[in-house]
Image 1 (cartoon, rainbow over the protein chains, first blue to last red):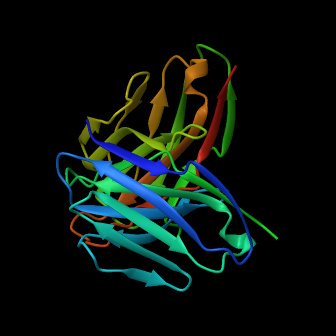
Image 2 (image 1 turned 30 degrees about the horizontal axis):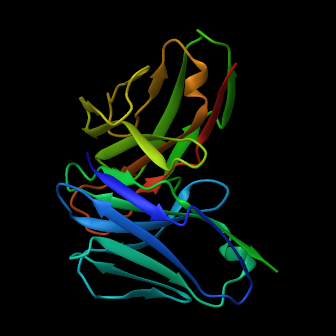
Length: 111
Length: 114
């Protein structure tokens, strides 16, 4: 059975802190790993990673994949209250683009 | 562009009632999905479809049915609602072959079964 495990499950930080969110996976077939941010409603896409060692970056957010050790991290620097959300990691196993999601990490950023 | 539209946004059902959650997309996406999200549990795939007339079960299909008579619409039917089906339901779509990995999600339908 395909598995995606995220840690920690919840995190409280203060504005300005840097956070690292973890995602490990065990799947029979790997096509890509995706990160989504979910505020009050639907998840919104952050990154798709397919190759090891290549960092994807968008503003204060960055992510990298290690296909040998089967994990990815999402870094957020200089956190802001607007970063408070659930961060979802998902793996595309290539079968009809179905995604297997982790449980999500709830990040709370305090002023 | 409306994207993925789900209705209703909220619904309360009594045990044993039936209902249909509607999902429509106007992006000509061939792949569509229904996920449910329970607190602290991520998203679990209920059913998916790779094109009109083709549907298949996901991870948690029991108690649900789907149909895909057109490319645009992918309704999810609950036949005999149970408290375990209390959840937030998300419909999503993607164009097969588009290599961005970005699923487009609807805004969700919050269902409570009492």
